[in-house]
Length: 294
Image 1: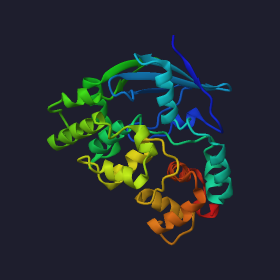
Image 2: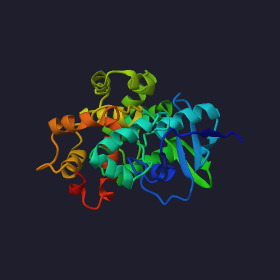
Image 3: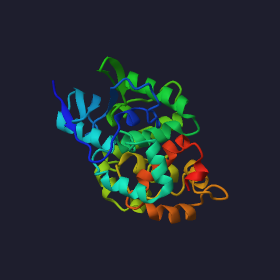
Image 4: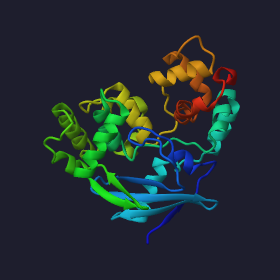
């Protein structure tokens, strides 16, 4: 049996990752194992992986055709384990607000989409739908046109590869315009426009401009794909309304934080602006009296 071990640098909680709840991953009851199924970065195959954690690290058991090394590298990016988090903890400790929120969610790191390709497809599917509706349709699409894998006693459906997605002319529950836009995402992925390494190394403004060339990917979606799928850790999050409301409350502002507020406050979060934005968005509700954290 192929296995791998990832050794976190800095605090990390697999439970926090498993219960993160974002996009198609809704909060679940953690039983000690995190189960994932996804398209491999080569965009030609799908795999599953069962993850557990102990004092020696995070252990993975891959299911599928890819090598353990390939699955380990992609899993590390998805769980933000490819970044040294010791600096993150030091940055958070300097800010009383972020320090208090991180203390309420120790070991929480951003959980990313498996790839920019899957993030872009999610953006198209979820437009004008709530997360539950979009998740249900995504799961049906994955089960019927992707690959179902047995992962630690559970049947998980991995999203279709771009080639599989392009073979779908229509699908019950997905409007024709969304099918067309999903095809655009698939073509962009096959052309290398959604390569995670390329996006991660690009200047954020340039990367988001390129992403917006994909039909159906607007400013918010482009930001989500870059921030929540490529693995960047220090891109400013300024245009997310829910985050603005959270920051406004946490920092005692008269209302939701404006983009200018976000830029000003975010200067103290460097070089982990993305991580701290995710932390506040995900865990601010755990602080009993948010205003007193400021």
